[in-house]
Each structure stands twice: as C-alpha cells, then as structure tokens.
Length: 175
Image (tube, rainbow, N blue to C red; front, side, top):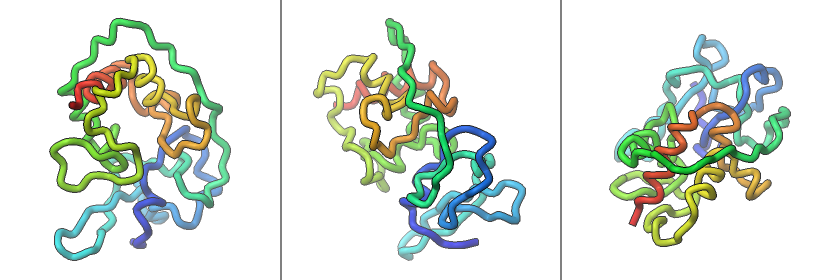
C-alpha cells in the first residue's frame, strides 16, 4: 500500500461510474476488491497506515487536484421545516469515517485529533444561522461557494435527508 498525503485522501465522494481516469495520488489499492484506503494514525510515530475502507469509493471523484473527472452540477437542497433532527445521532454521523466523517476536516468539541481544513465548528450555535442554510451547506456547499472542497453529501447521495437533519441539529447545538 502506498502512503500519500491526507489532503489527497481527505474524502472521496460522489457518483458511481467514474472509476476510469483515477488520479495517480488517489488513496487506492488498485489490486484489491475494495480499492479505497483510509488512513489510520500510528500513535506517537508520526506515521499513517492505510487500511481498506468499508466500501469501495473508487468510482467517486476525489479531492485530488489531479482528478479531472466530471461530476454533477451543484444542487439546491429541498429543505422544509421543522428540522426534526437528533443531535446525538448527528454527532455519531460526524464522527463516523464511513458516513459524515466531519472530524476529518472540522474541529469539533471533545476530539483529540480534529481536522484543520474546514471551518472551526466550536461555538457554531452562536453564529445564529438558519437551519435551512446549514442544511444546504451539508447537502451541497457548492451552491453557496463554488470553490469549496466540502463534499456535497446530499447531492451525491452519501447522506439521507434524515442524516443531514441530524447533523444540522448537532452543529446547531455546538456552544
């Protein structure tokens, strides 16, 4: 298995059917059935070890600058109130590498190895954003910022409507 930068791996998301033309720096074991690799920190070593992901994401666009495969256009979310989200379920999704994996990029309370690529989410509640705005950010941030590197979790079908509602409830609860 190759060792590459975490930024290139950061998160591989999008639509099936795009495996052709994978960038050279994608976190993959091309010879394995489940090609996608995830990093595991080797504590106190300064090293990462690469392990197979729970599912193969090689057909989905990566965040690599070398990945030139086409992807779907930004999509406006179809949010309707009330939120009906569960903050505890949202936190579980945010910490789960196979689902939201928000901790890979964002600093969240109570975590020893927070991300540093995304916005700091500590105290997010105090910013007073509407639930619909936060929902859109998670569903497809590209609508609000075309240059974002945040994966469009809803538009690409990675998270369900309820998953996103739970994440909104969690993020909106962060003091």
